Length: 115
View (cartoon, rainbow, N blue to C red):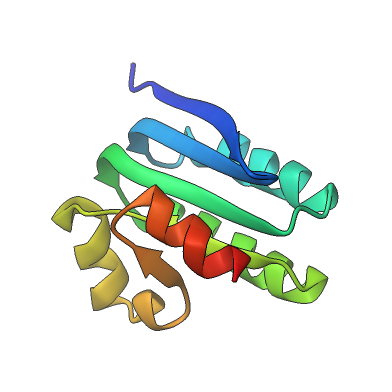
């Protein structure tokens, strides 16, 4: 069974959702709903940390796009942290990297998004 673990921490008042494991059809729904729930609380920004993700498929891309669209509607800045080809390559191949604010480190994301 592929497990995806999520942990939410806060830097300033920005939720950082760190995901560990595999994002696929089975695991993406809880992630999408968690991100939507956090956006409902209208934080100044939202960051998803994908540095510990070992598999990232089309469902992961869809989850990020949905979250970005919802964040845009609410006027909330959304950032994605990843330094791995596993995540960055599919985003580049689908041009979704053009839609998202990508960072290699959580501190950079927080600094940029809270500016």
